[in-house]
Amino acid sequence: MQLTSPKRSSLSSAILILGILLIAANLRGPVTGIGSVLDQVIESLHLSAPQAGMLTTLPLLAFALASPLATALARRQGLEISLFIALLLIGIGLASRVIDSVLVLYVGTAVIGIGIAIGNVLLPSLIKRDFPHKVALMTSSYVLSMGIFSGSYAALLIPLAAYKDMGWQLALACYGIVTFITIVIWLPQLRSHSKLKSKPIQQIGKGRIWHHALAWQVTLLLGLNSFFTYVIIAWLPSILMDSDIDAEHAGVLQGMFQIATALPGIVLIPLLAKLKDQSLLTLTFALCGCLCSLGLLYIPSYSFIWSTTLGFCSGAVFILGLSFISLRTHHSGQAASLSGMAQFVGYLLAATGPMIAGAMHSYFESWASVLWLCAVLSLVCGVFGYLGGRNITLHKDA
Image 1: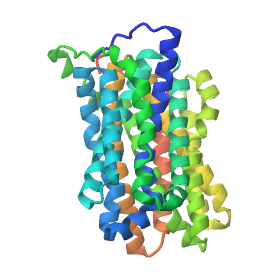
Image 2 (image 1 turned 60 degrees about the horizontal axis):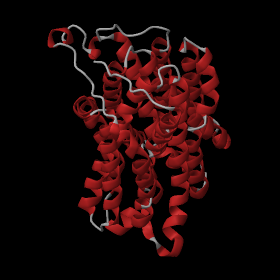
Image 3 (image 1 turned 90 degrees about the vertical axis):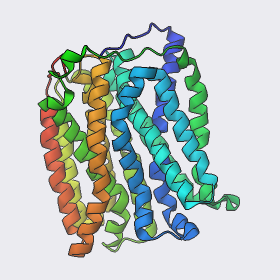
């Protein structure tokens, strides 16, 4: 598959970059923010614990199931229109949160997840097409935007819900303002909608992306990192409170973890511009994540250091993995295929993470096993990161 890059003026390129950063701002906050007001949601809608847990798992399942469809959508409609559709879905899902209904909350959350999945898959392909020589810079920048918006939103949700008794529903729906602004900024891109073109059918069987070891290395790097990240997002406050840290402090540290995931972009932008081989860099961040997981278990008095460093390492591995989607492929169509594969497998793993961690805690009556699991998975993630970070590319027929 290949995509012809349209010629752009400096002004249109600037508008495109702004659009990319704003789309990225919509790709995490609408689903991670709900954790901040989950207690209010449970009380208001009388949800059971499994029903509440499904609110955090449902978007991840939607990410996984919708990711393979994003490339087909871009092949039919083009990247620009497909990303516009993604924004519309996110906006509709956010607007539905003002409706006082459990069913509508679940459906709206799933719709948001589908929209985010399309954006997650297609943004790396767009960057590969229009910024082939600035992949690291653009990837780091959009992950930075994603982290800053989601972390700030999570921190503001509780005071926003309390402001003039606004409530959790309006507070959650308020993120639709960001989505609306993004839609307006993205409108000029709809004039261009080059479509992904398929190879002749006889070539496809010889080069499916799933048949290549490098594709699996990048996929498992992102998948294991997502598993680890969503376990921490879901359970870090409980882990910290189990170590006699008060609930308010634990909530602050969870917010710091999410904000810290955005910061590696600042460090990685100059590094990735100089490094053609990112093997040791990826392995180093993964090893650091392993040590911090054990730090939370054995030296909880330094939880601030462990939590923020964990977030930083998780964000760094995520940025590197997303960069590999572009750096290890030859053209935007191949990047879209690898992105779809990586995010399908990755988010299936991520969806199981919080549930497995919760089950392990119930069985062992301790968070020690969960933190050891995170440490071991960080090591394995580092191995795949080392392999996927080598200066090689997929076969052109993949």
